[in-house]
Amino acid sequence: MKITLKLEELAMLLLGGFAFSRLDLAWWWFLVLFFTPDFGMLGYLFGNKIGALTYNIFHHKGLAILLWFLGFYLQNEVFQLIGVILFSHAAFDRILGYGLKYEKGFKFTHLGEIGK
Image 1 (cartoon, rainbow, N blue to C red):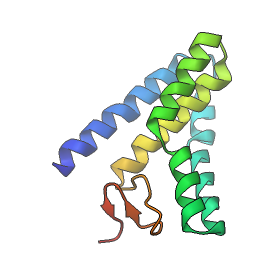
Image 2 (tube, rainbow, N blue to C red):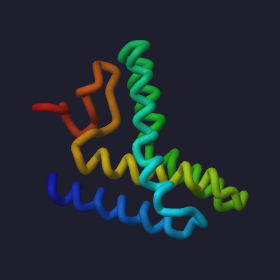
Image 3 (spheres, one colour):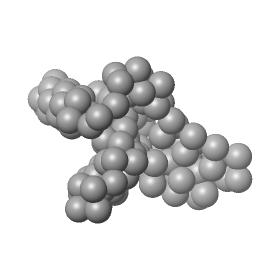
């Protein structure tokens, strides 16, 4: 099952790349911004509860899709870009086994415990 889920996430990462290609931006923007959602980890400086909240906001695919659709509806390329980056990065993280976080700590995710 893990392979199937990773292939599904890879398909979503490729979809994110395709969505980015529809924007009027140079490819290097995708590469430069790809890891910006990891700034959500800074919430862990304030404890596990805040850390899990901020990490999950920055890695939530539903929020990413909502932002992209909002940008599409408003014809706002910045919102579309934010949605694409969040979506693509979240898919990439899940390929690596990093899921949404529980309040118990960074290594406790919806995909299982990291490092186990």
